[in-house]
Length: 363
Ligand code: SDX
Image (cartoon, rainbow, N blue to C red; front, side, top):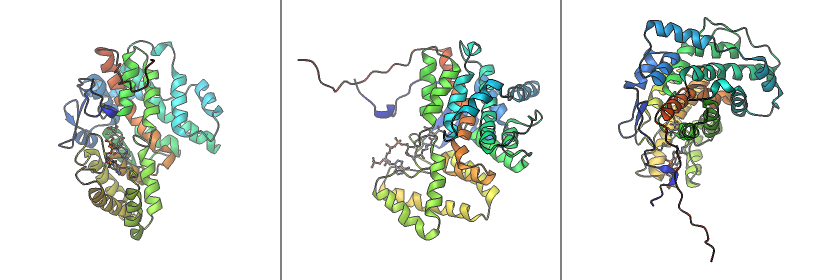
């Protein structure tokens, strides 16, 4: 039996949801280039595409908008639970706990788009309620006229966000909605393969995404940029980490052997939003030096910029605090987790690999 560490190079399923093409640097959602969808469609429409296989027609689009807007109100018991969680608990853990508490009989059985909308639409409300609770402020009244992402920023700030910020964050939501068999999506599929429910699958996926090797990276990118601070410190800072074989957050990928197409799209948006900002100029210079030094220290590994590097820049450009970087990634990736849970449930076979025993045997 051959063992593949980290299941590298192992295909665990056939999927119609997305193609992550590591050699050509392509990301295709149900036949559409993700970057094109990020320019032309809303996150709600792309969720419909990923869950149903086609983009919504005009009637379906209006129904989808109403469904998402109608699923945002936080029930009283969840407000009480969120308020009771100790203040030092980080937002990703609050999300995981609150989603877990949503589980009731209505989520039993195979996952559906309706179940997925109920979770996805509520995540920003959970985040905003928690932020206001900790700050001792009142969240603003719901605004059903606002889109999903506009409402997220509105809830956080108490004012309607600029169209530029909404479009930038909507593009982020579309570009990071889905990414094939990444660790958190695989976790969701494993849970679904036992015929468990969507809430359990999403809770498992949140736990996986939290890790710094996966969705925890954007905060690490911003910490790196803050620690470097100046042009003069770029090379010595990076060299010191690479000498210690430490990972640079925002670089490298298990699949992409060329630039992550999402990084290119997010770079363009971040540069457009924050042109002239000193921190952005530093970020671009750090990227240049990091790629050069990664080639020097890891020749032939083809370690390139990944989605998280410019996700951190875009978050900073729209004014999201570092504590909300990973929680915001959860708000977008819930779409891909649910799509794969639905697909797993369709052709279900228990996911149960083997292991090579290397321990002692009885005499
Ligand atoms: C995401 O899977 C997905 O699709 C994930 C994602 C999605 O949308 O779901 O794309 C989102 O998680 C992006 C990745 C975010 N994580 C980071 O930016 C953290 C830094 N990146 C690395 O930890 C790493 O690149 C991984 C985890 C992303 C990928 O790791 P692999 O494929 O398991 O590669 P590896 O860890 O085995 O490294 C192979 C070699 C090693 O050198 P050697 O020890 O063999 O000499 O490459 C080196 C590593 O040291 N390497 C790096 C590096 N990434 C790999 N060295 C320095 N900095 C890095 N970032």
